[in-house]
Length: 419
Ligand code: UD1
Image (tube, rainbow, N blue to C red):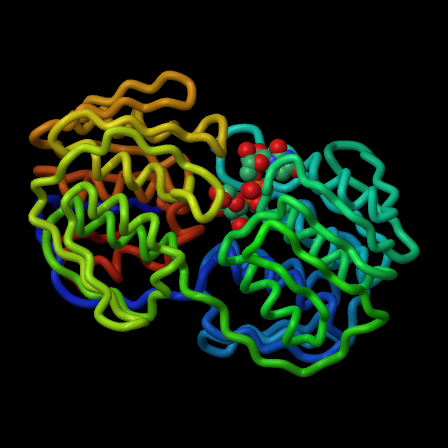
């Protein structure tokens, strides 16, 4: 088991580069299944979830290579229709393979997806949408799904909730469907726009991503050699911003895209953090640590404040002067990490989806367990701003979304090592 040992209390200073977005590269890799040509995806982070997706593509018979930050998928041969259970169960994104694999070969065996322990994550919208497009889906045994289709039929789908994964699944299914598919109440996340851009590069007629209505006109076959670069990771950027906010210091983030992080910047500015856009790709963050509480903030789908930044924000607020209220509206059970923060001396009360955070003067280092990806990031932030030494166990959760986080943070003055 890997652990982080963190000596808190050091100001951060320097520059950090933002890597490609995990949540963009995963559906884009799933989309390469639709392409019989060669897809070269640039700016791919070297993360466990990305390696799992590469493994799944290879197990389907596709040739997959990594060259530095590029992943190349040769789409000619797709020989298998079964997604290995040990890979599918590792991450939530495996579910978007359904639309792509069914679209291309008409049959798939896949287990229910895995992912972080942040409450129930049903897939009802994925299944009902694909069924509406004509798929036959049976629950076999031990959580294995068997899905079949001759050819998807374009149709109109109104989502009950703008689910990111369900929107992506429908987009992928619709590419090789008969006729037009319209998704209403679609998710508007930047990763959805990135997927649309990738599909447009493949020649697919798809419009509207970033708004609540997406239209896709199906085609018979996709065969194109393309190169595509994924967008920067807004949650990694937000996490670094939260690190500086909590520890104090001044860093410049390179290769960012401002709009997707603007809600995070807005909140941190309200806490008293100085954030300045140097130019379209570089941003300065400066904090003197004397942060102010936030009256109330709700997580919500994009462009609202992202649920994936909620734990990191709570860590920042745990030392802000005054009382803050955070309401988690996206996931049912996303405060698992709070119990660990309490070991460091935070004053946080959680009741269902509401966390009340009373800012304390100091946190002290503690022995901690990361239980999920963003919760693990929150513990790292708290440990960086605490007095004394902290140990964070189960760093594998953090590794799912951050590439060698300890190395990046060390380059800007944090005392953090992996053992
Ligand atoms: C994606 C992101 C995740 C982020 C989340 C919300 C990836 C790989 N993951 O997850 O990091 O936290 O968006 O921004 O991109 N729901 C249902 N039924 C469904 C589908 C979803 O009830 O069929 C519910 C979920 O349980 C959850 C909410 O809808 O409460 C949002 O989920 P969704 O937007 O689908 O998130 P993911 O795509 O799983």
